[in-house]
Image (tube, rainbow, N blue to C red):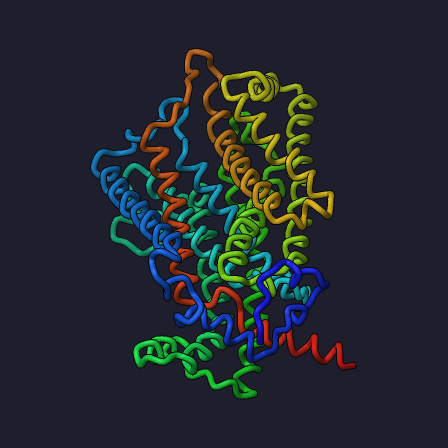
Length: 467
């Protein structure tokens, strides 16, 4: 079969058959990338220097992240720009941002699976991997922020002779259970979906080492009828378990703020507003990853313009919900008549952090409105710019929620200003490098698109066309 590398493969509607794929060619294409017969790692430096440069730069960022964490443990959280009254800074903002990015993977994998949405097939695998990496990185930041991270295990309810138990009324304890549950269910869901593909890689691998490695994790999969029956049952059960996590996890994160009495935090709109914002930033990250993948690995026949169009529609819907949340906050502040809430709101408009506020309004509210036009949703370069601006805007929103509500307390004598330190920026940038490096390792050693589900989609479409 001749591969189509132009955008013409994306023009038809829903099916990967528009690019001429068959069940066998699907497996050959995707497994070939992993097994070294179609990836950039199989060619010389002069032709694919971008891949090796990306690996080198991101791994350097990982090493800097480890070194910075070690230095933080030695010197304490005074390295950060936090102070009194701004005791929360970049670390908590980064935590909320990364958790939000991890939401789209669960939504795409679980909810869209239960709704029988076929378009999830081309993007669910790397969206699930994105969820694992983002949620894992998010879990690091509260520990770094503790000040005494070696006591992080005190948050877990384990029997001990000192009778030290977690404070169950603290939402920080709720975070531990929400994130750990989210990671565990997402990991199981991701791994169960991988099992048929690991067996395909085992059967196609040419070296004994790869056969043993992939065969070990394939758990003896042979594709028998009872294997498929148990696989589909387990996959649907995990999808049912994962679906409530889309709402519950970021709701718990929002309670870190809304359960307090600080103006700007104490808001009942936060739980649904945080969930919508998480899906907003998560789908933006999915598009940010999908566009380079489809271009660099010639996957236009799998990740079609229609898939990007549908993801962009979800982003547009979420942007409207987020905009409603912004307006609701402003209305509630003025309607309440609380002078502290009104002052906090007006400080966002005209205070020291006003440029951050208006910047994220531009990125999160105005920029996504371009997605009303179909031509914009199907223009890859513009869609990539929009998704990047949304991710930047959502990070600025989380930063402002954390910092701006704290920097002017009830007493003017305790007002202060948060200025991020060099180490704040280092941890943010190096966490992004860690995420990219993990994602590069994922696409190097595991199939970025589900071969089993894609083969099933091709077969279903062929049967529909035949009938």
